Length: 443
Image 1 (cartoon, rainbow, N blue to C red):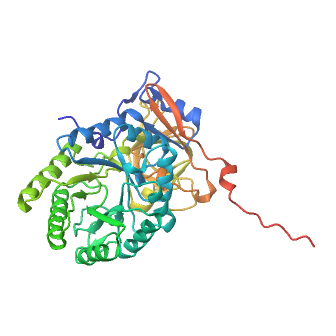
Image 2 (tube, rainbow, N blue to C red):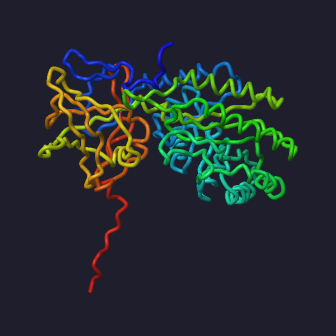
């Protein structure tokens, strides 16, 4: 069986063209850098649509599936429109993500609102715009959400988010399903939560359970076990409280291949495990197959994206490393600094015949920890070369900042030898537009 997109380092249709330059979907990356400037986020539409269709095909045998893109991985209007056209809904976690969907003309009935500390204004806006579901994360939110729904004269569908007590082997910052987590209700608290909803919250309708076990997951059994916990609790709550819970949201988390040593399972493999667990647990607990929500994020957009940088200065430490610096770094991709994340890269312009050198790629920001890639072999990197860093589609742009007052990069979408701006490069005027200057008082 062919590898799925999340098992590739490079976007599909990546090759060297007749000039020897890297090309993605017919677009010369060196020309992209010259035309739009660097740093530059590049998203390949072919790769993006291919992974979306892999998910649809993998779950096609299950009629009650709802594929929801985890918007926190990358949310722009154009990306949302593409995924909506492929039949995806959206897991949103902020007012900004909600506004982006509305601005892109996407109905919020296709969205689910998640998060551990939603604000009053965010909840009110979501309900006014008829959000499909809200995943309730804590007791405070139950009361807050009900009061807003009551004020608006609405009855809001909710899922109860639980912590299933499952730890996956990933970075501790992106584990979310273990017991000591800021997210969700502990299983010892679900009865109290349901009683509160039944007795005090006439404007809330609980329809199911939600859990999420983490991100950049390479295991498969954790998904099988997670569904077992959800369906056991679903059955217990239905029997105990005479409910009719019929939905489970299992989150996302499937990993991608950042470097050659990474071995994530395919989308087909994960789908097989998930659907087998649902079948087994339906038989075990004698219940009807629930509606299934799954929320992939990184595996949808990660491989489709690359970042182009221009190499500037270099430094050879005596008897030590050689550093090369690029015109971006931790402000456009904080993951190496935050998580120790690893990436693959190569020189985009024609240097394949040049000897390899082991270098460390440093960012331009005033932090010693601003290192993008340690000890990577590149073809004789020099000032002016274009560096292409792979698998930056997820959590680069969405976690970017203006640290050191550096402007946020542009983003282009490539397909069929054509490139289109989908996020404009920030300007200094935009950077300072919210500054309020202190004027000297007139004496």
